[in-house]
Length: 195
Image 1 (cartoon, rainbow, N blue to C red):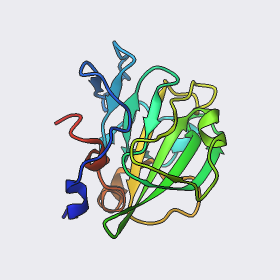
Image 2: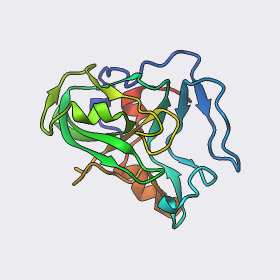
Image 3: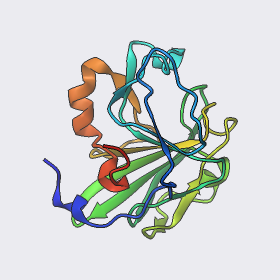
């Protein structure tokens, strides 16, 4: 069941052109995008992409939404809220620079993780700082800032308050049912970016 709070209007997290490519990352080979603007899907098994030590134990189910664009593209707040955590996950393949936000949507608390940001994105905020809907939270980071990935933001929603600046963005397929309940589809705030 989807709470009524998702029926309100949200600001785009990344202002994507209509030509953004929806990537299919679930195959045996990782495709090369034809444009810097891309969308990586939620609830997608990606065994070829997540084969490093960080994903040991069969973690290949993506529970976020990836919005790709050129380095430095703005990442916006989909709704008003505050910074809950900020930090840096330095391991290759990890999030790099991260912001975790807290949103009170008509009495329902929702948390969001924005991963793979630039270093300037996390330096500009203090924990507890408030922001308005549409404010720039940060910018897409380059590979040296974002865990070694092509520039994109990993947007992940959560119902439970995270203790740190981290959430498991990729889980084992056996944990799918539990993970999809804990981490709802980011298209609820980002809009219908793909069918």
